[in-house]
Length: 336
Ligand code: ASP
Image (cartoon, rainbow, N blue to C red; front, side, top):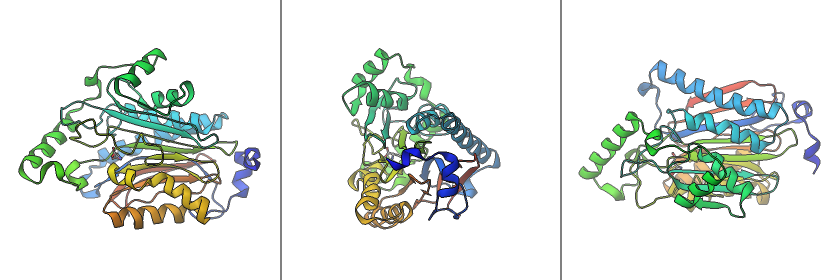
């Protein structure tokens, strides 16, 4: 594949971009920390600084891997764990609570070079679910493992396990209390307004490596007060995560039921493949037309094999950041 001979230096000179100015270096890693109601008025300067620092740390962790010649899969697998470990995000420690006041985690990863993919859903003891998803991709013939089976598989492969209480935080417990209180007083379980679910904080990463390969990864606790073994889009390949070297790598965040129904991540890739759209045009249409028209909320990060990035969302904010081939970091939170 011609792209496999590209290196960062060459990319620096060779990349036209719809999403960046033509002389800016290609983006090699983009991350998100969830979309939702994120407004300046509700944010303290200290909290904002914490988010910015956590996003930058994740970008630098993934970038270090790329700089050493690591693959895009290595890079997304390095960028996600710092965010899973940070209680700020709805993934790993600090994930949202189910209706039973426990934490159930979902994660997935996809390699754009091979279209291999791995995912875990409804896991309760794996400290870093993204590492389990990667193991499923690389060490099993399957794409998705769920619950206790996924945990047994991760254990066999020596992944770190923790008590479910490790993931618990007072902040998420308080959110569950508020959501359940509202549920009792309003339309309850049938409520589709994401505000009622108090989501935000899912994490995702997309990367482009020195050989021109793409990868995507997503990790989440899902939505507050979820029940009955609910699984969202994040561990579903084509909905919350997708990567194909011929088009783009995508990680999504938002109201998962809509992302599943619209196969959001794959739809962006398919528009690029079949319609010849740019990553920016494809991602924009899928979020601002298709998702919005159906009544869904959220956003995506999408990166093509030339380092063009698009990060559209239809909520008031999305934690997000990029790092380019020269190591320049950009972090943003709000819509404007
Ligand atoms: N997409 C996730 C889910 O529905 C939630 C989120 O991204 O905030 O499980």
